[in-house]
Amino acid sequence: MSDENRIYTRTGDKGTTGLFGGGRVPKSDPRVAAYGEVDELNAWLGWVLKAEPDAWLHERIEQIQSDLFAIGAHLATPPARENRRQPHLPPLPVDRIEAMESWMDDASADLAPLRSFILPGGTDVAAALHVGRTVCRRAERSVVALHETDFVDAAVIMYLNRLSDLLFICARRANRLAGVEDTAWLP
Image 1 (tube, rainbow, N blue to C red):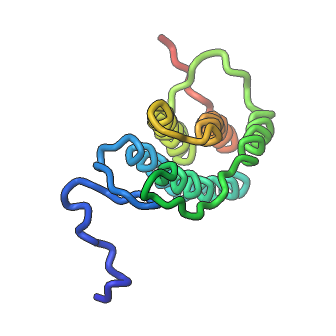
Image 2: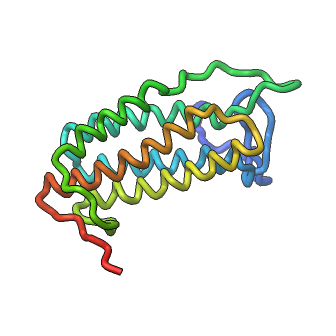
């Protein structure tokens, strides 16, 4: 196999990984955890697409997946420091935060008001969105933890916070479109 098609490099065999802009850190580094969890979220959103959502949601999930790649690139790039270059990065999807708020308003217009907590589940699309929502919350917690020790653009935290809300609303919407009622939590 040619080197250009080979994915393994053996450079991580000792538990370290390279960052954009140079430098190596342990794979347990908070920065690696943060962008790894954003990557996991992106994979879950791929699963949502596999569950065949309606066209409205499909289009938005594809946009979000692209956004998450840009966010991951920013998280994988520590601030420029001595002996570390600052590579060119895609812009953060800051405008998408407001767009997600609009999407939530549209998606929740026909939903019954929440009167209790609801249990995750319902259709395949809704269940996958609920898992995505929980992975998004975990990614958000990791990004906040990284932000406590190193620079993270505040827009990344805002984006993930808004995205988890959107995924919740979209799960409820997916169930409604399929005629499946949310299951209320009855303590």
